[in-house]
Amino acid sequence: MITRRNFLKNSSTVAVGGLLATSALSRAAEPVSANPRILKVGLIGCGGRGTGAALQALKADPGVRLTAMADVFADRLESSLATLRKQTSVADHIEVTAATSFVGLDAFQKLIDSGVDVVLLTSTPAFRPQHFKAAIAAGKHVFCEKPVAVDGAGIRSVLESAAEAKKKNLSVMSGFCWRYDPRMRATVAKVHDGAIGDIRAIIATYHTGSLTTKFPGTRTPGQTDLEWQLRNWYNFTWLSGDHLVEQAIHNVDKIAWLMKQEMPTQAIGVGGRTIAAYGNTYDNFSVAYEYASGVRATLSCRQHDGVYNEVTDYVTGTKGIFSNGRLATQGITGETNWKYTGPTRDMYQVEHDELFAAIRAGQPINDGVRMAQSTLMAIMGRMAAYTGQVVTWEQALNSKEALVPASLDWQAPLAFAPRAIPGVTKLV
Image (cartoon, rainbow, N blue to C red; front, side, top):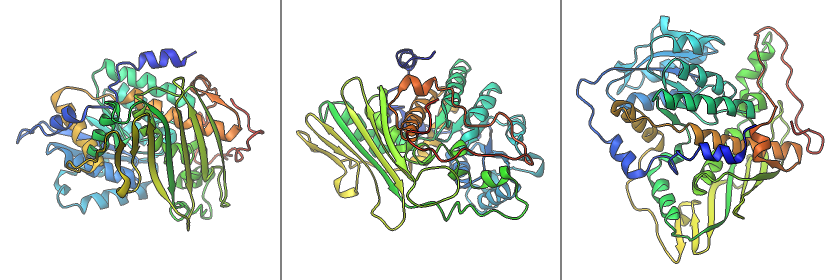
């Protein structure tokens, strides 16, 4: 059994907060040779986030070439490729052909085997552990979007793959983009240096609009169970992990960062669905994470239209407060009053700039452990809300729950679990 103690012990080599802002930004700024070695990139998962990641990779380094793409659906691959080819600044660095356009449930492996150097993993979260494992086994550098899994079984797989990547000196870049935002890096560094004293409480919110227009759940005649669920993946827990794991996880990751990767001992949560919808996900959660140090971090999230929304982080310390809320209140107040005034950069682009700079320099970045930690924190909160029970870190990490089917068939019936009912749904 993996315990919280040995999990944290094995995580001790992870740099607090990812890379230090100064060294990481300077490394990204290192000049690249006018005639650099070509780095072949493959994109797995051709939705909007995947298309954006591919564009950022192409902009990160003049020696990057997008040579292969993979998706379960041909129309998504074709749409993504057409969008990328319209970007005149990178169009001549796109070398995807019919022979390197892979479609189907096994498309990811065909792409990995096509001779690429770097793999961008941006498919539906359910498949991230499988894709990550295959990429690392093949010796590929990886950009891995969040979340990295939807259940404890997936987290354990990701941890094994991250350890293997470290042995092979491969870079693993996480999609937890706030770790690569210059303002957040500088501010969290101030907090870690004691600008607000000892952290006593964190309140975070991820209140946004509904995604029903993006995932309406429409089912066309003749569409199989698997195709319908894959095309509407967000509203199925086995595919997305639910709203808390797929979206509000950014706040979860910032909590982990602020807490210097101290993981909570347990979580208590509530949640449900207010607006009727197909599938089995919730549209609101509220989770309290409790720490051995006595700190409590609370996160509430919802996806409703027509209401007041904001995405915030409020951190109370013994000497002050850090607010990452509305622009007017961003900064540190208390014994130290401070607000970031430095340069701003697109954090999504910084991720890729630093990934390719690390590959060029032969100095691997490995976000593997912390991306697994943050994902497990979110899964832990979902488990608490679904069951109505207190869930410990060890219970989440060693859970026997495996949401992703062992095998998938386009034509076979594919049932999905009923929506969780607290007090009825069991902790597995």
